[in-house]
Image 1 (cartoon, helix red, strand yellow):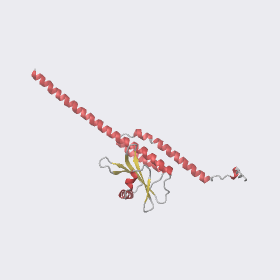
Image 2 (cartoon, helix red, strand yellow):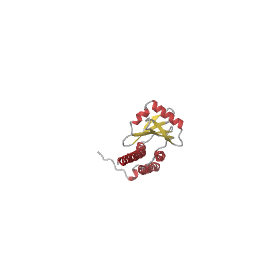
Image 3 (cartoon, rainbow, N blue to C red):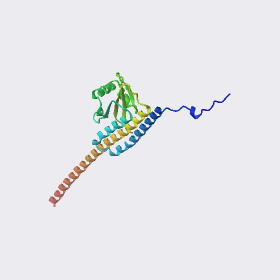
Image 4 (cartoon, rainbow, N blue to C red):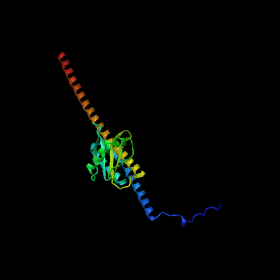
Length: 219
């Protein structure tokens, strides 16, 4: 049996220049996204005070748009009072009525609640050819909200790499948001403790003064 003849370098198929360019561009985009994600660590140190929340939410939109385009973006955060998901942020180009409409539908059919159980993007087809992408905002310890993005009709769905990058971005930002919440609670309890100490110190001084006066009267 004759061995197959080895191909010479000139006979080996070579990727076309356009394909190479596409691969290079995609690789550079991923590298840039990874650098941006690495820089999100600075948010964890800077996220002190409720006034930082808008900055973090805007950062989410900015980083997500570098990975994948959504026609509308909404970020819903869980409230401490009634544990509902309230719209805390939406992109400037978002159609608020359309966004609320698809979210209401997802809540009614149970898709929104189902997405909370999965720490990854969930793509839900819409009647008009769009897709709603839901991704729970969760830290290491608990869920704190939900990311919602509308994919325009006809746009390719997210690749595996884009989905992974989105998950990393949202995890980092969820951690930063949780840091804000922990900071605010710590500040509240420290203030409460400070007031308690002041009140008890005041009461002790009053009691001491009363005791001193009583002793003087006896003597």
